Amino acid sequence: MTAPQRKEFIEAEEMRHAWSEFKEFCWMLAGDPVLMPFKDGEPDWQSATRDSLQKVNHWSDFTAADIPRLAILTDSFDRFIGKGADVSVVTLWREGTPIVQQIDGASCDRAVDVIREAIADDLPLEDVYGLPLADKAAGPQDPPLASTSAPANDNLSPEQAIRLRRIQADHGGEIRGSTLFGAKFDGVPGQVFFVDDEMRFVSGRRVSAPVIEREQLRATPFSLGDPTAIPERDWLFGRHFIRKYATASVGPGGGGKTAHSISEALAMVTGRPLLDPDGPLTKPLRVWWINAEDPQDEIARRFHGAAKHFGVTNEQVGGRLFTDSGRDQQFVIARQEGRDLKIVEPFIEDMVAEVRRREIDVVIIDPFVSTHEAQENDNGAMQRVTAAWVRVADEGNCGVELTHHVAKNQGEVTADSARGGGAFKDKVRSMRVFNIMTQAEGEKAGVDDPRAYFRVDFGKVNMVASGHSQWRRFVSVPLMNGRGLAKTGDEIGVVEPWKWPSADAIAERAASARAAVVSDVPAETLAGVKVRLEASDYKADQRAKHWAGNLLIETGIADGREKAKAMLAAWVDAGELEIVRMKDASRHEADFIKPVAGV
Image (tube, rainbow, N blue to C red):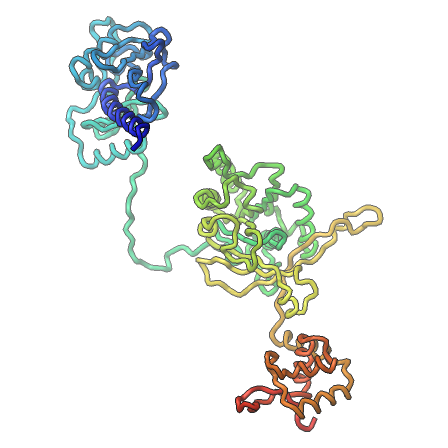
């Protein structure tokens, strides 16, 4: 250890030791630890006021050089002598006899005397003077406070001890005997003790008042009974939206989440199966659709476009749809204040009140990221924000749907693709993921523009078994709100249901595509190919050196391996060629392509 380190260590030990003894002195004088102002190395009593004293909470709040400045601030003397509520007395803690002096309030020599007497007797101020003690030498006094004396029996029952410790955990202080000293309620310090098994709080500024205890944690016994008596889960729509829970839909930007939620909202408020043509009519729900980013006129365009496409009328909506924009009202449930994330409790209260007033069944929030200021890679913060929306669902007796983006450069979207920490995924009850159709899927399904199609999968479901993918597609709907030559006006992308083609339909389409590959090949050219295939052994595996496709490439019939592969498959489909299992020159069995006999 170096000399500076040793010096620093000695000073730290000195401060710890001083703090330990000083705290005992503070307790004895029922006061708060402070630093006394000094001037020219001496205590500056002229400038000493409550405001000039520096509060100390830990030994690290002062230095070794500050030890002579340590002092105890004792106030509210009507606790002890029945007067002096505005009196403040400072005791300078030092070697030798402590200096005691009043700094604030009307002159009260008795307050200074009781401090000196407690020091002389080496007894706690509380024990010497009790609560309260009339000062007979000071003249007329106010009548004693009712029900403020500590109980005569200093023994606590086990249950009382637990209750007192619970108050100590919430409000601080130190338990001595049957009393909790130094507990703070609304910033006011005082004592808590039992009067007729009721906890009371008393301070210099507060007459004895009942202490409100937080509800004690209790374990509830469980007994198996009749399962038919358990209330059924209150599913609201599509085995995804459920009352009293938060759910989520996750996908890339522009992937259909917003448009899909609009079609769903219209389906919910009308009770019509707009996204499931074969589905039944359902009970109409009341939906509050909130977009935290788009203006209200853009929200109106989108809903009008979807309503026009599905033939939804205002009478069918029936006043059950509510829409709002984050540009007109604040929908922020958590704000960052410095390093702290604060849940906006007034917003939750207002949100729940409006949900209950309007009897909302489903609240849709789009997008989730615009409702908070939390760091998305902070799991703890994301858990708190999502839990706050769960509170809205629970206290509002509704379902809350949160639409959320995925992290950049994602391939196949899964429940783990949601942007930010995994706490979001873990907190919601059901999560759907949106994936845009790939080019390969588009070719297989036979669609011209794969990006106009997407599928919806349950990425996380812990209340119902996951089903098959649901496919959707965008259609463009003109609002006819244009002026002049542009009569069509705004074009709105509306999401509608789409079914993946059947296996037979896909196979038929693929066969037609393959047939088209060889439709312009002359008959004499095919005849020449058959002669060459019959005369030699050409394999069906394109990895083989003597692959049949090489014959087509070498003769110029095909301009590449993919084209050659497609032509061979087309002629096999047409019955012109076939795959024959036979032995090669090395006596190993392999698949060869030969002309069909008799053709």
